[in-house]
Length: 212
Image (cartoon, rainbow, N blue to C red):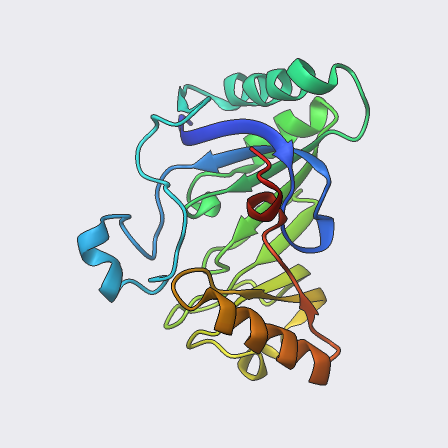
């Protein structure tokens, strides 16, 4: 299977339970909830998306003919900065990574010593072998991934914390929605976490610290 990647880069994870961890990010092109065109944003389930996932023209992006080729590129990104240091970690994201992530790619990354994480909207099944599952539910989308390691909810939006209380996740994060109302959204997320301690505040540290 060939893979379409928007961008591939080494950085520090900026959100959630593993914030601050050295990571290779593999951002797949495409999403099943929005086509990425600005003119269609208002009718998309994830109208608040802040990510460019269209095409393959980002840094490190491109078309990779098979799992071995993409795993090798992921490994090269790690070694370019960290050499042979242990703790290899790759985060597959998007768009929607589960449109492309498969067991062949997961196995190829494992063979190179990588722990494999996925950040998904939860509308597609997770392939076997993923080591860390982060789900971010979107309004109007049918959730098929109802358990995992991390539940990350952009707040506020149509999906409320109360509506996902029944889901089985080890960690629960509220992430203030970016945009014109960012200050008010941050205050709302802080207030909710203070009165609902099952939830934790997640800030986009990479944006605050200017981490590329």
